[in-house]
Length: 470
Ligand code: DQQ
Image (cartoon, rainbow, N blue to C red; front, side, top):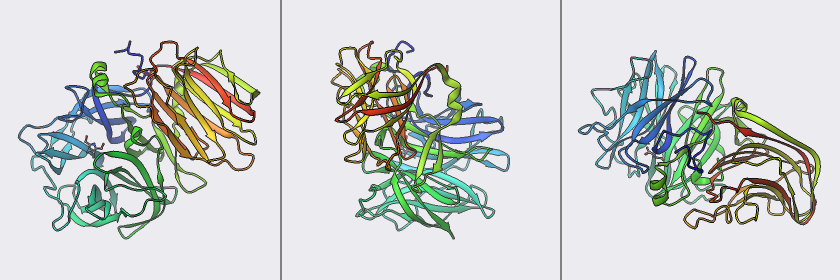
């Protein structure tokens, strides 16, 4: 598979087959643990296991034995779905969704050998049924934390006809759970600033910079996108005052989960799904990639911003830089010294008075393939145009756009990670777009800057070839 031109080299993914959500993120001692939804039997979603990997720096990963597999007669006979990990007084404990015959229940597993092998709790499931009397869509995915000497847990769900919800439970011991109500109920009628879907998958709830944040994956019969709510939390109720999409790549940054490091940083991973046909995924033998780790902060707008962690600098190899150049009006500034498909770019561009400016990646020499990242001041959007990303007609080519309005005099600041078919874009601490592109030509490796209507000024460009993590 290392010869596969679309397979990322510095993003985590399993040795083969299917991966989706990050699960059970935890730092234990010095070691970071990443579990993930995994099908060891093929590059498609079925009979989900928990894969497992460890790292000392969040960047380089080592594969570990499968942590959880379905028990044929158990409540997880059809799959071990998403959940989290907690430190229960020194005992590492996984709280996960067991799936069988359409039923979703809550199960536990613990480890006695330092998170290597896992034993399921004999009396699983610990929650066998959703609360009575509610007309629910789904009952899965767990966020567990300690509060006033008790465990609190959220389970993702939706109230039919009302909106997505996160059901709140309380327990003294992770085994006996009492339902205490909805932490919050979404409103199906409310579409601005973000519609939160009919059901919430993978709710994640935590304190950040003196506020509280809930992140969840909006679902409406199928995955839509992840959103963030920021607000205050008191007496087991959460009152958000800010809501927004987390990543405007939508389904390409789905079901994210975060955890707090020993230093107190809040780090998030998300599932980067595929944008090509099932037949192509089958032929490739793998599907699904983990995002780069992103540190969460609250930005000037009071929204949740994601910053790729500083440890990623470990990957930097050959460096090029440019300072103070002009990107010609309706033209391009070519960067012949920078070619590749595993790059990090830091670009600071001052747009002209009118027209867009940005970056072109993975260009073929004759322009038959290219991916454009353009800031359009007139419409206040950062747009990723994939319409010419690939000559392969089987891949998804729709555009992405994120709201972005630069303040007077504020330059466009792009931080871009390109890893073969994966593109992660961060702009000005307030816009993120993650997506997939599948250029078909081996020479689609060129990079340029572009400007429309008026010339733009390149203030600074720093770019690195990035090393493989394996
Ligand atoms: N993926 C898991 C579910 C979760 C969904 C199943 C989100 O637990 O709701 O693989 O992608």
